[in-house]
Amino acid sequence: MEIMTVDDFISEIDGRLISGNLKEEIKQISIDSRTINSGELFFAIKGDRFDGHDFVMDALRAEAVGAVVDNEQVERYNNVDSDEVIIGVEDTTRALQDLAEYYRSLFDIPVIGITGSTGKTTTKDLVASVLETKFKTLKTEGNYNNEFGLPLTLFRLDSTYEAVVVELAMRGLGDIKTLCQIAQPQIGVVTNVGLTHLECLGSQENIAKAKSELVENLPPTGTAILNGDDKYVRQMADETKAEILYYGRESGNNLQASRVDNLGEAGLKFRVSRQLEEFTIDLPLAGEYNVYNALAAVGVGLKLGLNINEIQQGLAEPDLTGMRGEIKELKDDITLINDAYNANPTSMEAGLDLLVDIGTDKGGLIAVLGDMLELGSAAEEAHRQIGKKVINKKIDYLLTVGDLASLIGQEAKKLGMDSSRIFICDDNQEINRQLLQLIKPDDTILLKGSRGMKLEEVEKALLGD
Image (cartoon, rainbow, N blue to C red):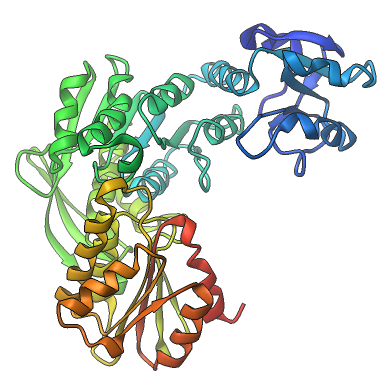
């Protein structure tokens, strides 16, 4: 973050100085008193399960330069030292977002926003890897993709950065619009529209409407890069005056992938056609769904003036976030696929495809599947459909954890899978015990479930951590 004084931004957050000096310098912004450093300004965020106002004094004792608090709470801090900055605002969450919007506006650099039901994190990583061949690029880290994480990501900007790639998450209508107001993206990528968040939004059409807020909030001079093979995403072109670039594997896209060579664990090789031009992409990521993620990165790279060699180089050496199709080799030539960061019907099926793609004839295929959350009324049928996929893909052993995931096992058994090969477990500890009895040399194991299932605990057990 570039150093600012209180005077630089207090009017931007409609704040009033309760104590301290307007000329006090701010080195960084924090919402966590446990990790705050000297010279940082603490925002006392009030959540469902915590209230940052209870930790203001902890932040000050950790040498925070001051705190931003709700106006109704300022009397709690009447006894702080007079040189410690206390700023009162109507709402600290809104103030954090207003400050991030102001701070982002200080930088005249391209901002790329990415959303979608699946693939947005990998797409974000691939876009950033491509842009890094030419520009110093800031990208969203971890799950910093919501109304708190996005501001904190933008506060990492300084004058050395030349591009920003941010992931935009949502749980309801209006969420992505708010994030766009903060980040002000000129380029928007929409990967697909699935059933994630159906519990909150009620229908796939509403999910599409929520995702389309990214496209709606692009400037007329901007570019929407859309998965043209997804009917919901293709229709989003009607919601913007920005330039449209479609990508996909079907005809009718501006960027079309063809001749996809699935190399299993070694990744993918495919051709990309653009008008009269063709070039080859070598992608060291397993799973054919990554063709789409790579095409989006190609589109962003071309739009920002990168040449083909730079794009190819970025995709050949991607810097990826963990637990997204992450492949590890264990002892006895056992392969572990950790794709457990999140799950929905589309990504669950893609995970099973990946298991089949990189499995070997020597060993068995073991699927460890947890609940797919936030599917609302579609949850039961969605899990039963995955049971059918398990049968179709000839998975050797199925282990489930969670009430919903048990339906996967029930459906697989109903369709003829031997019950001795199905293990419906109560928790991850039982998964661990069963796996350690099952696995043999050359087996391939998939871990896939929603974030709340914490299947990384299974990975730790297999690694002996």
